Image (cartoon, rainbow, N blue to C red; front, side, top):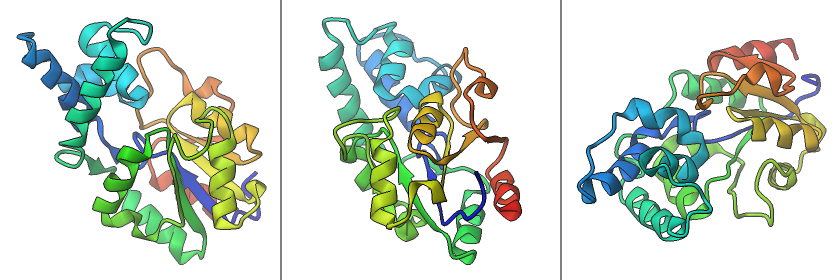
Amino acid sequence: MFQNIRAVLFDLDGTLIDSAPDLGAAADKMRTDRGLPSLPLARYRPMAGAGARGMLGEAFGMAPDHPEFLAMREEFFVNYELRMTERTSIFEGVPELVSQILQRKLAWGVVTNKAARFTDPLTRAIPLFATAGAVVSGDTTPHAKPHPAPLLEAASRLKIEPGQCIYVGDDERDIVAGLAAGMGTVAATYGYLGAKTNPMEWGAHAAIKSPSELLQLLGTA
């Protein structure tokens, strides 16, 4: 699956950037605004990959079927919009990885379930993403991951066949989407894996413990 690769696509949160501090702070502000004690970042971090659902679940034990969930989610979104880049950072090794991808004349891009409302300003604010050939958000196509549509959209924008792409992500939905799109798949086990998940069971073609390990996979391609 790693032969004749022309592009590398990545999930965003938990794969390229560590956004857990800002996501957690957005949810924690909702707690403190209500007179509840603050929770440590360590509580929020494993659930960061699940976005608002994960953050509200951790902060309030609130599931999406709760009657107040939609209103609480919008409050969370507003909080997050105000702080998206305060403490978010690029994972160690990612700038070097992107540099090597470009040196090898490969295209690269981002496919995230994050809404464009957040993805667009966030990627514009971080210089790393200036060289990305495609940035596809969770609401760019009618379907979000685990549906393959966003990945196929990214390949189309890059004008590269899906089978010539690798998709790297830290969530089972990423691997399911990548496989359905006919791409090589890589599980990023350094990301936000959640409390009860085993990435070795996702069916990915490979797994990496750090961004630099992806270079080894590309080196054998």
